[in-house]
Image 1 (tube, rainbow, N blue to C red):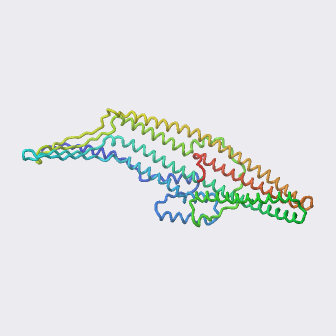
Image 2 (cartoon, rainbow, N blue to C red):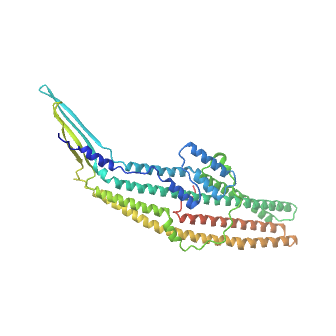
Image 3 (tube, rainbow, N blue to C red):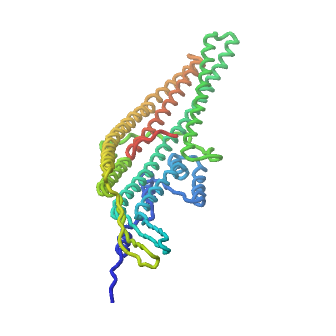
Length: 459
């Protein structure tokens, strides 16, 4: 009894199957959710169907049913912003690329069937081959490692999108609330100026007021009306910026906001370690490190496949002659002959891309340190300005108003002087509101600078 040797397929197929890498079916959204809870204390959801969107819709409606706090605004944006949902789809795309990279290249089947009639006998030539790309199988672990880092980059990019949306929403909320508050005081100024203009007109008609002073009061009234119109526009624009970030439309845009900004904190803490803290927490720096690792692996893959990029091997059989003649069995090998392209250009390109990633990472670290220093300096300065308004200018304005009221009651000054002082006091209050708003915007910028680069601004 003769023992048959195992065919080539019995040797090639185990190698091919061994190349199939095991890949998790989870793209890693849980890591994005964990980062949102750690940095923001908020929940995230990646909606996949109408039922999940309906559940989120109910949660958003509950948050909008009461005056929207800054934390609630961030939560609504994280649940309802469709641009963020689109960013999450990048996870699915990167995961699909990883799944594709974890599979070996499909085998090739080569078939040839030719015949001719010679001396009344039909002669055949039949060739059949089953080819497997061995280069693809051998380099598959490297390709999978590259795509795993791409997926990790996609996760970090999703985290960065979450943090940026939260920062933009906070800033838009502060701007919208400040605009509402400033508009209220602008209306007070406009009303006081209108009263002064009407009183001046009556006194002028009675002959107790000259034309110059009446014109001045009329100008004050017209300027106050113009200031109120501008404040109305700024209020609408600030609110629309917030609405876009929250992803709202229809009846939902009628949500209520608090009447005032949060109070100024006691004092910002000294943070001498901010640069070191940012170096360990910045998402963009993590992404830069992952890019360096991916390009380093890509460079290694390019070096290993520089000369032989395609090598296919597999069993083949050939029949020549009459149809009932036996097949000749053998092996077919197919590969590229590197005569003209020896992979030098591909290697140079991979080296340049790897060096580019190193340079970009170094620049990102420099910019991160500078951005943190700049943001902290702005925070300290904005706090000093807001405190100066709160502790110095506002008390002085109130004291002047009280003194002028006493003088008015004693008939030492007239009603127009009293109205002018009231306008000045309201202007001082509005400047204090703007200073408080600017502090909270600076706080948001610093919080973001510790985690990633500043965005392009509110859309």
